[in-house]
Length: 166
Ligand SMILES: CC(C)(COP(=O)(O)OP(=O)(O)OC[C@H]1O[C@@H](n2cnc3c(N)ncnc32)[C@H](O)[C@@H]1OP(=O)(O)O)[C@@H](O)C(=O)NCCC(=O)NCCS
Image (tube, rainbow, N blue to C red; front, top):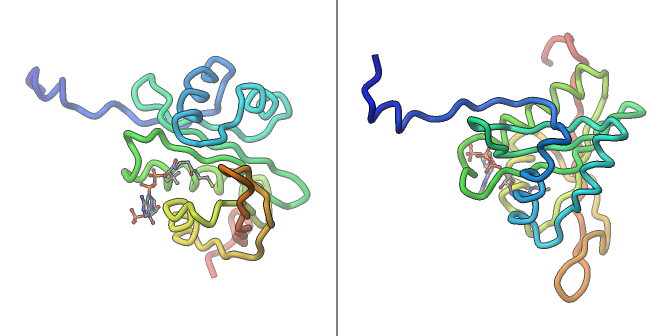
């Protein structure tokens, strides 16, 4: 049996589950703390309403991370992927992205796309580790302090669900 100090220091359970309207206050708090130009609550609400794949990672009962992805015409678009600042670099972003890409494969998508600021080296390293390849640049795509910032466009070919690894 665990002693009291062990119980106090034990890690809360990590779960990945669909995002619900009731998560939005916590999601928006993480979003605001993470981005200089955050999505509004209305954008998340719309993503839920139109049926995008929206997932949260919970640690205990707290929302620790979330991802939003659209699926259609054979393409998955990862629109947002965010881990709360205090718990980054612990493999949570990797687990969440893997879960989104698995969902895209299950849904029969052939490829996944995403945009990222070229200055976001942490995210770019994550995407490269998954095998994403830069396929383009959208000029002036993002808001930035004092102007606009380009978006690097990344693509990953998805293996058909159930097909053997090549
Ligand atoms: C990008 C982000 C989602 C990564 O989440 P995370 O949980 O910290 O990442 P993980 O711990 O799963 O790391 C996975 C890989 O990402 C890369 N990575 C993550 N953080 C990094 C950092 N600070 N510097 C360099 N590489 C980093 C590494 O390749 C890492 O693999 P490794 O641990 O084997 O080296 C997180 O930094 C974040 O939420 N940032 C703010 C929001 C954002 O910019 N989202 C992306 C928008 S396109």
